[in-house]
Image (cartoon, rainbow, N blue to C red; front, side):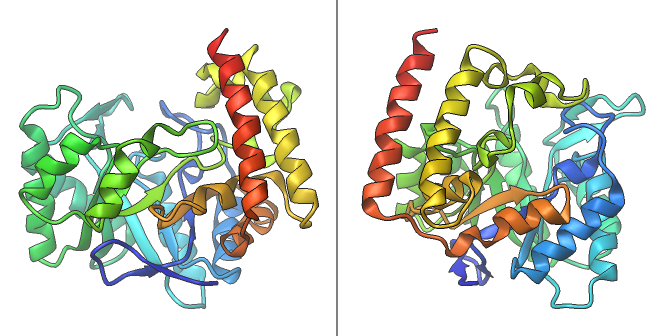
Length: 327
């Protein structure tokens, strides 16, 4: 699989990376529902066998459990070690309540805990998961701490997630930003206007999450499946997985399936190819809950859409967006 340079770093990453959010399992605020640990490990192994060279996780995924599963998967894997990316500032207490904490003391404590759970001496990319909700000076405090951890050798490169342009500019005054992790998909395109151009102009790598809109665009989502999502699956609370928007999203999936059929590809692979067509995007995070799911999407990094197919998707998705806006 081809690779792309991630921003100002020395990392060459594959266009697709393995997302370990679901590997955190259920029983926490933003879970994907119950998940079998053996299936998670097998999915990671399959992704690596298919050529993926980076894994993205976070301390908060499963309240530490995802990082532990990643460590176990890498311990059992006999191939080349992938790059491991994780995130900080979302902490939890004994009652499993998640609370943001951008203080230097918390970030340092979180870093040490992640190093221990991941069983590594250095984190390849350490990211601030979210900016402070009040957009206050805690942004600078947390970013200064990441810069210090980089100088100390605890982390190799540092990035942010879910920052806007103003927040990126504030962080850049303190230390160079290697990467930004924002949401991006055919149905979620807000970053195209300002954020992607800024990152491209300032050599900030972009690794997008939810490129298949949390499973909506994979081809496996149906009305019945959406209605049957477990109570602890965060998607049950998302209006895009409920009527009337659900039907419009499923119409888009049928269009993607039709385009994919021309190439022997799935709708999910078409959705990923659409995201990766943007020159400002370095890579896309793709979660898989089983080896079978990994087999179906992890090769999308080398799949390219023709210009007329991109135009076809643009026209159809625009009509879907207008219809949903009228609801």
